[in-house]
Image 1: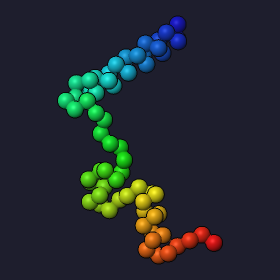
Image 2 (image 1 turned 60 degrees about the vertical axis):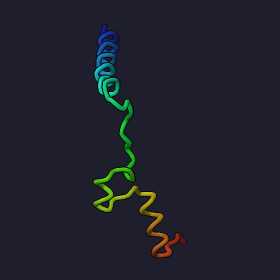
Image 3 (image 1 turned 180 degrees about the horizontal axis):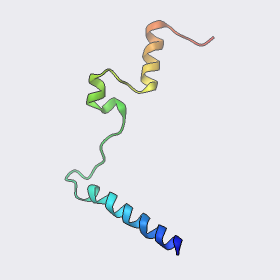
Length: 64
């Protein structure tokens, strides 16, 4: 009985989450990548990989 309740609950949750995708005009998810977020660009925030790459280029850092 508990498994049936869990399956129904998951099914309802999936249906509710898909409503936004189905009824959106562009039918796409927004990008979740930090580099494409305008607000984070304004604050100077980059992804960790990009920040590490920039720091190594600027200061010629390397691991000994």
